[in-house]
Length: 443
Ligand SMILES: [Zn+2]
Image (cartoon, rainbow, N blue to C red; front, side):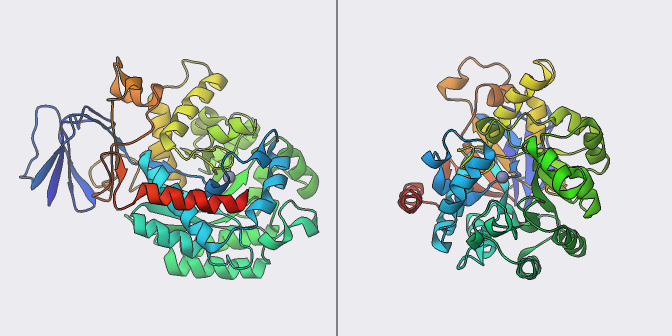
């Protein structure tokens, strides 16, 4: 059936002033000013109260951390002591707790306008070997698109690393499971609901051999690669001391300098490294809230984008944000970006592009992230009927500048997943009660 999303208050697309038509899972027509759909429609949705965006894409998260938000163990700490304090708490994670954390995080993201989410799961203590399976099952139930990344850590405290010994795995086990979850869940085709990425926590918690093996595996299975890189300045020094080369050299040596790769944070690069990343189309996920919370620095977003690197947006894990609101992340990216580049250098349109098309490119996708004919029917639709928007002039700018934080309608592949501000098929109060009760185990 053809559905006309009709007469939006505003829309982030050219030539769609009267809305758009979807059929099945895709956008089949944009309706310009003064026009009507070229063929009869079976139904229409009156969007005259709605500002319509492409579905927002979150490119970095650690879903399990929703169980340790605003945790006192993390207070007054920079990244490394913060990790040292929280790792033993996270090491207690059990499958049923992960399941509820994933459900809560995806629901929270969806309510803020997210239609595709990436998660970076690195903890595999005994009993949690099938963490990726749990994430896939929950995303499928909620109907969001996901890139679930199979994380990896093999160096632990016994090797002088940060993670407790019980959360890491040996590298043969890691590679076998990467191959298992790729075969089971990865769909590289257009319109995919589930993709798998391969994602060592950082290049410093696994061997260079494993980095290279993962790059080979990604090539064979046509999937993305992801890792944290250059979140703090010390990483540059540590990399040069321990590996005898810079972090971008390390990516080069292990086969990671390609458009398959997107990096979380990506703050402390020198100009030469930025141009190399750009030439190779390596994506960078800008995690503004987390970078402010841990005083990590300000991502060189504009320089990366000018060099050719896709720039996406991520909320990051809920222990360092501690909110999973993708619209809030877009606003943070604008504000911190202006702090770095000046007030005239960035507009709401730049950060909306990062949160949609840029994020999609980071995940290796060109079938989502824009409103155009042939792309998937994924939308985030916001009303401006809260006090915070009263008196606003430009509706698209108002979403970012006045701080939109809750979508009224969200559609994924032609299906409504948020209706009147509520998640379809989810008892939110019951989910929060269950999640809150589980969080007590992490006190
Ligand atoms: Zn992270």
